[in-house]
Amino acid sequence: MSWARRAVPAAVAAVAAIAARDLLQRDHALRRNFPVLAHARYLIESIGPELRQYVVAGNDEERPFTRDQRRWVYASAKQENNYFGFGTDNDIEHTAGYPIIKHRTFGRAVPPSAPGAGHDVTLPCAKVLGAARGRAGAFRPESVVNISGMSFGSLSGNAVQALNRGAALAGCLQNTGEGGLSPHHRQGGELVFQLGTAYFGCRDERGRFSLERLKDLVADAPVRALEIKLSQGAKPSLGGLLPAAKVSAEIAATRGVPEGQDCVSPSRHAEFSDCDSLLDWVELLAAETGLPVGIKSAVGDLGFWEELTTLMRDTGRGVDFVTVDGGEGGTGAAPLIFSDSVSLPFQQGFSRVYRTFAERDLHEQVVFVGAGKLGLPDNAVVAFALGADMVNVGREAMLAIGCIQAQKCHTDTCPTGVATQNAWLARGLDPARKSVRAANYIRTLRRDLVKVAEACGVEHPGLIGTDAVEILDGRTASTPLDQVYGYRPEWGLPSAADRAEIVRLMTAEGPRGGSAPPSPTAVG
Image (tube, rainbow, N blue to C red; front, side, top):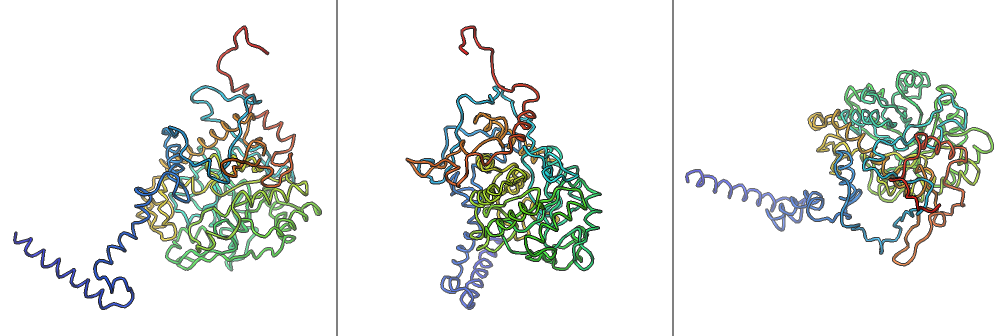
């Protein structure tokens, strides 16, 4: 009782002190008008995202990824049951823009009936990257699903390690992001090296691009291709800033910048200033390294793409691949206006870019890569139907290794150690264990893509045509995908030779379908 008699006056005194401070301060009207009580409002506001995420929101209400979408990724990564029961809870009938995939009753490819069928499916790209332009390092990517560019610095070292080890286990590529090639990227996975505006990892002491350092770097690491980053969907036309507090000795060594100083990425490249000089640089990099070279960009002004493709057609110079990032793509930090309203969403942006290449008869010479929430099977299938040859997964891969969509990426307080440089938080992420989950997720996505392709009557998702997808206009109408985006009937598919070769590769082990021999009375 004596303890209680002392505690109560102390509590009253503390509340009185808070009240007095609230009444005297002038910064917050709510606290001045409602001393003490206003703090409850601020507390509830601070935990609002968590309350909505775990208590209030329905399965399909949250963004950027709904609870159902996250559950599918988590279950796939853990090899748990990722099926859903009792039918869809999406409001299909009243959702304009909802894609419907049309299965075939009698298709060329018959889905296998075994319970484990497709779990370890091989799913290479339908095109050979760099072959059309005769690059010395041309190759056929082993996986149509690859890990998108996420820099060491934006992600923790443990997260990058987990993703690279996962890429090695799943046989896919990992894009380094523009932050350079760190020791965490050297865990067995093959890489696409991204060249951003600051040329991290291949710059000289004055911050200028160094061709010799690039050549030394790619000769010393499993780099299969180079990607010139022009912009990204979540913050197009912006540079970047890694605050001095995050620029550790390891990050400084990886990027080639001073330790403990603000690390700035300019908004524009210094090595080129227009499409003509861009293509000159592409050809220089390809000639000096032997590697396929591509570009990554969000889509805004179509004038850039028209000029680029016209020069490619008329001069013979060109990129080997194009990564189109949708405006719905993610990033560690960006102004709200850029995240919400700058650059076209994936389907509109990609279809316009593809159409620009196809109108100049260049679409069969370029590998198209899509990014922007394409780590979900339904979105990916639409991307393949529109002409994507591969998809890159970013945030979905983060979810697979533990991200809980806390949306704290920009605060350096990611609670799961994925998007932070806080050593204590990062230590909670075990790269060895999480790499297995990353690989499981990628394999499951590939399996689902093959299953949908076979339901559409073809052997590979790259062979799904625009005729296999319709877009709902509401409850009573729908429009075929090719009409929505102005495609000609032959667009969206690889060349006839590439189609024949990918069918051969996918069926090399013999027919994969069927369940039992037909009866003696079967017809035909």
